[in-house]
Image (cartoon, rainbow over all chains, first blue to last red; front, side, top):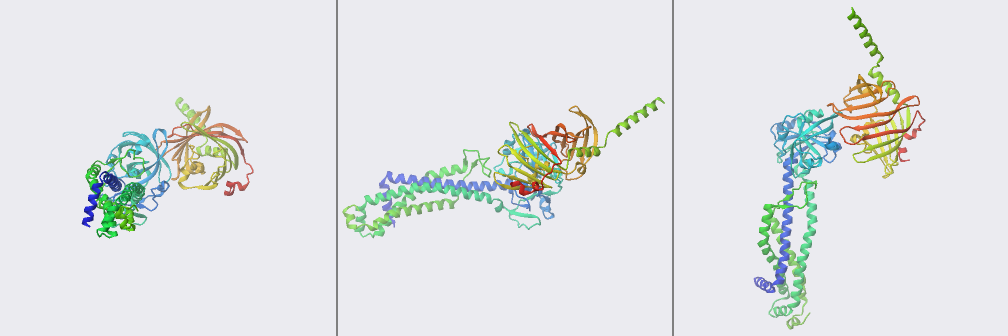
Amino acid sequence: MKLAIRLAYRNLIGAGLRTWLNVIVLSFSFVIIIFMKGVMIGWDNQAKTDMTNYEIGGGQYWYKTYDPFDPFSLTESHAPIPEEFKEEIASGEMEPFLIVPGTIYPQGRLQSIVIKGINPRQTLFLLPSHKLDTITEAIPAIIGSLMAKTIKASAGDQLTIRWRDVNGTFDAGDIVITEIFSTNVPAVESGQIYVPLEKLQSMMMMPGEATIMTFRDSEKNRPAVDGWTVKNKAELTASVDKMIKTKSAGQTILYAILLLLAMLAIFDTQVLSIFRRQKEIGTYIALGYTRQQVVGLFTVEGTMHAVLAALLSAAYGLPFLAWMAKNGWTMPIDTSEFGMAIAQTLYPIYSIGLIISTVLILTTVTAIVSYWPSRRIAKMNPTDALRGKLQ
Amino acid sequence: MKKHIISIISFTIISLTCLSQPGADEILKKVEKNMSSDNRVFESVMTIHGNRTSRTITSRTWSVGDKRSFTEYLSPAREQGTKMLKLENQLWIYSPSTDRTIQISGHMLRQSVMGSDLSYEDMMDDRKLTDVYTSVVSGEEVIDSRRSYILDLTAKVTDAAYHSRKMWIDSERFVPLREELFAKSGQLLKRTNLSDVKQIEGRWFPETVIYKDILKQGGGTEFKITSIKFNQKIPEYIFTKAALKQ
């Protein structure tokens, strides 16, 4: 085996430019695949972290009729905060939200919105809810930058909102935008405004009521509470997992094309080597090599392309991947309207497992592609091969 | 003595004025008598004035009291054949393009009717004003050269859509000439202007109504009745779901 490796190395180096072209193409595949997979892992990590910080905390209790995808369910989705939660709420480990439908009138246009009541003193989310802790004639409200862009509003603007109280009676009032925040989670921005919880409860005539409860500690065992459904983090981030899975499946096509190009080059090189080196093959057999040993020699030679490619990738890929991990990949298009938790700049995360698995998979595929044309050697007549007779 | 005589005369004049002015409930009852009928068949043109363009929709409606009505949209081509059936507090809409009948219920009733300033719920509200509101006459005003009573209505039930209303009622014809709907906070939400009051079959009736969502830009929604007949014989099958697909 050692001899085979030495021979393969000598033959590859001897082949010069042809070998290096193959190695360069294969190394591109290495670097691009590791980079793209790293971006996916980075996106998954960023999306879940941002969702935890802005939307889901450590998990939530939903009132039984609450469905975030059905705005019509909001009117009925409220109930008094259960006694079981009050201790955690008092300690700041759980935050109640009241969510009701409403209408906003920016520049005389009518737009349906969701009005969310949030505790101004909460510390569970990175939302600037402390900006609601102010005394103004109008109702203080904070909105996301995406919402501000949609309704063309700036901090300090006053807008009219309309809502219906618990009995269905119309009410209206002015809000003043005290802060515009920025997040990568459109689900907490799009079509919604945040007002102080107690104010919203009083506006709706729903004192002490809430729609969802978000808790900080995801590890704690949560008991079932009558009328409330517990949603753990895995359930609440399932949409991100599905999205990443779909995107990864799409990327597989790109990986396949890259691999196909690299493997095509290696396959051609192998076929050409076997055709041009028939005399050499005959000599090996004459010297006592079995056919299988000669096949092995050529397979090792082909596989060594992958080893050289891995080394070359490490030479230029490691600095590149490290630089990308530090500075991130800023997407050329605006991601704020994608409707999913995605940052404008994604920071790839590379694990040892990712690098090892990618190298192993590519090396295995290269070995298979190298072995495939080498099987012809086994069918060769050694005497003819030694004579240099073309077969 | 002179002072006493002046006081007595003033008191008599004020008392007579008060006696000649009917009470708010009486005014509302007269309005109701004028505006409601056992049944009616009418054709109307609804023009929705948006910010940039206006849309006109024509329809024919059969209604019995306030509880049952059937509307067939006649134009434009996109809406032609669409039918709407209201029975008590239920509403169905038939769309010929999908050949399907859907029931508008719950929160869907809060949606706008064909993009107008009217919601389905506005159309569905068939409770008598006197059952929902307490009313007082707060003054008089001349509207379109007609002397009218101003009525302030305040909800006496908890589930009224509008907490208060203000109505201007023609003092001779007992037809509403204007109505304003207010939020609980006192914010004006909607204004309705009624005009082209004509005597039809012995009753005064406004043929043009302009609904305006005050918080929204645009010219409002103009609802003009082009022909109306009261107390007609309307076949019962009209008010069935089967009639929607015919």
